[in-house]
Length: 374
Ligand SMILES: [Zn+2]
Image (cartoon, rainbow, N blue to C red; front, side, top):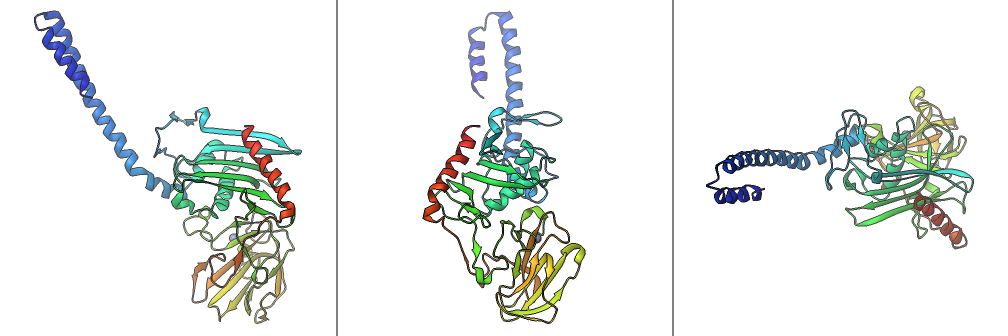
């Protein structure tokens, strides 16, 4: 910033005796001083904006994804061109394609995260196409790797291969790859169900399952498609989601994981659908089972651990068939436990059986090629 001024100044001395030149250089000198002041002031403004906004931005965009629309870049010079209406993305920012794989249309996206998953995905695809649902879906899967509210960084790279399902805003993620700056590594998840078609899951490239499972004897549901929400899930607003949602076909048997006594059934059916609440005094908890199709117990009934109590369904306020399972602290129902960290629920992960491993490797290659082709 100092150079233009000093070089002009030295030229000024050299041309002391030539009057017309002096006038010209004085004019240029003044312009240069003006520009210096302008740039210094402008630069300062940019510094302040970059330094103070990101943490707030992250918080806001998690809590109010719909309302948050300002652009913030933390680690790189913004490549986006702002217009009054919208933001034009340069071609390198996003790759979005649809290809055919084994007779199915599959989609792939490759992009850098900006502000939040929801914010970024909704810049690439529209709300009508289900951007919010897809980003919630991605967030749920990533929740097994990291605390996305704390660990996501602007510029982290995300690749996803997915299928659109028939129901609106329903997706099946086939591959997710997340390159994290904070952890200095890439997390990967591949969907695979060949060894157990009714209980597919997400595995890393070595065949280790990513999501945990509750041991069968204690699990409220033994066959489910996937976990679609965990307690505290940000998509449900500031308070967060209070239970764990297991996506499952209507009619799937539901069990009580622990011995207890039924306290009530079918209350607030409009929201909860058919439902059961069981008290477990010895464990200091109550468990709740919502959106059922059939309830097989009555209030006051004593329940053994592992006893079937209902069938899963799609009743009450739901978008798709699932079981909402909730573990509440007995003396303070606002305290909710995550079944996968709750001390009384034993959990485990699976490994792809060796006889299925070659097929799994082919699946991994297939999904990887869907990204490479794009
Ligand atoms: Zn739920």
